[in-house]
Image (cartoon, rainbow, N blue to C red; front, side, top):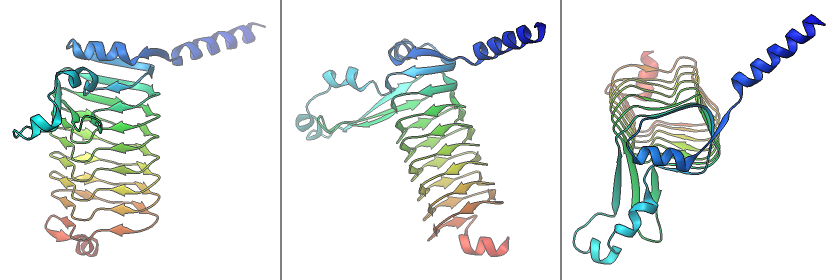
Length: 256
């Protein structure tokens, strides 16, 4: 009897420790707007996280015709100055740092000036970071992207990790710029992975990465380490015009 009671108590403690609270996206965005550091763990995020604050910005913008004809830009950038950290969180709705608004004709982009962490997280829907600048250390390790994701044109100025990450839908890093070494070690891309025109200025690791479909590294440039140990690509690799420390991809493989 004593053993049964002990087992039940341990099970209760285990369940409580891993229970996830629910946090409303609106509360998070309020803190972001007020310049507070966002540090959330073991939570399910309910509602869309719009780091561009598009709905707030739209009423203040001039009409497209009048503004653009005078040389204005259709891109509206929002600077997120506070730390953003999510650990072991589930995002039930979209996470947006990029919104092309067809109705107004404006494109809204969020840039991050402080540390950004999405570690051990799950994106159930879209994760849009196109054109975003990440100025400090950034961590997307051990994270699952179940919906469409894009880091197209994104810039990473400091340390960045995509280790042990799962991309279930098509993902693109086209034109992305990594100033420091980045690791995708042990990651899985279930559908096509696009690194076309991507620049790795201080090396990249694709060690043990599984590309379940195509890998597009056309026009990609790598300076520094290029670790493809045990990398698997199920279908085609498009490496036309790819340069690994000044050498073509094929010559790099021969050298290895």
